[in-house]
Length: 383
Image (cartoon, rainbow, N blue to C red):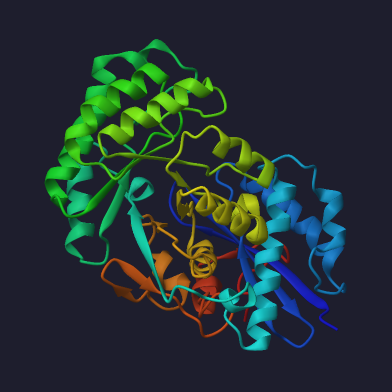
């Protein structure tokens, strides 16, 4: 019987703005599996629910779904209890597939992609957020030869209340200066993606898209809050973008198939990008497959640490026609070291590690040196 013998949580300070939270499950035979519970801004709550999970799950069979976790789930998308269930799912499937000598992708139905296209998200890794700072960092990433696509978030200090500043030309122009500087720095052959965090008004989004048409953008992500805008506004925005060769992307906050179907029914998106922390693996795959059936492109939202990166790569490997995966770049020197082995790049794609579970990671020595074990209150519990 696959009994859970231990469950530990680790916190690693990645930067001044980010803490990565990892979860480890150990089975009775010593096999371990990992998931990522990073929840920026709600780290204390996540640590608390992981401690609760420890008392609920140790000594119980590692069978999915894990019934004791249902008491911590409230059905609300994005709640720490729901995220916990999905992270335990990651760790349990990682452990079970490792023990079977299978890659997680194989365990989830089979790898149909040996390599996955990726893009570099520079947002958390940029300190100088003026146009010149964005351009310099983007040029560095492009010149490495690893990435053929780069995403930036040029709308800094955006108020979330829909205030009139979002309509102003100075506000739009400040973002356009960053985008234009990056386009000039990386050249025409590198795809350029822009994330607006859903904070623009429809009028501001239209103005930005009109002026950005000359900059050859691959996609604009969440230009507006899809849940609050009238459906006709959303569809009109997509039409405006598509007429300039720009895709509209969104879906990072999705947590269930009904939520996904409601968003897809708006017909406002060209690219759907759920986050496996919010959906879980099975639901995330179902959302991606539904998007493909509708003729849409697929991605995964993966803005956190290297364990989520490894999990997302395994899921992406199982999706036919998967488009491109997000990777957070430049925020912390621990990213590649904690990952276990550096990613192997081939022409803008990463070779999927099919050696077992999620791959080689994490690096135990990095955890022992830099992590705090918040479940048993001492570092290095992996040793």
